[in-house]
Length: 204
Image (tube, rainbow, N blue to C red; front, side, top):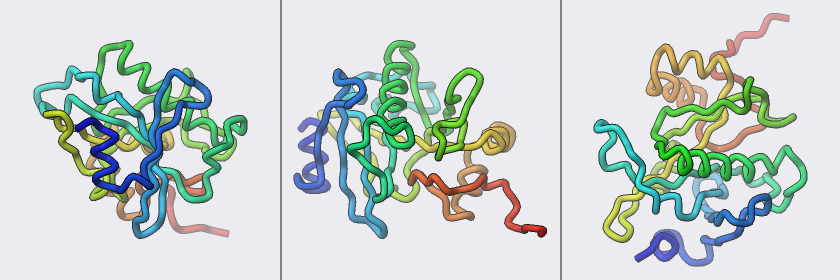
């Protein structure tokens, strides 16, 4: 059983749709329409898991991965020209190309700067870095899947701020994830969120 039939078996055919990346037509992508506590749409690579990643010994068993963005319901999936929405198509292509061309791997906690020097992702999304995390909000739905004799893991792509990156580098991935969970932040894209390290107290 290949990836698409396996996803259809798990979620139902009506919830799985394949498309060509509108900005990079050579890339195949998958939409998953998930009815969870809050409905979300998963924008995911389609076939990255065919590439066997050269993982470290610590991560043996995670050689096959698909990466995804978790989009909120207000996200305009058909808006290809507005950079406030189209950056997801650009970055999911960039990330897949990077891991293949560099013959490297992605795992939980790996980070990528958004530019050199790092710059906000878009006018609305002010985060300057992307981090790969095991699914939080979609953890059960996006659990690993057995396909064609291999285990496919799903990694979410989460925008983070510079201070969050510094905290992760100093304290570790588990600690920044704990901060996210405490603040009810997860892999769902949110144009309006602040850094988890920003004090909740305001002085006027």
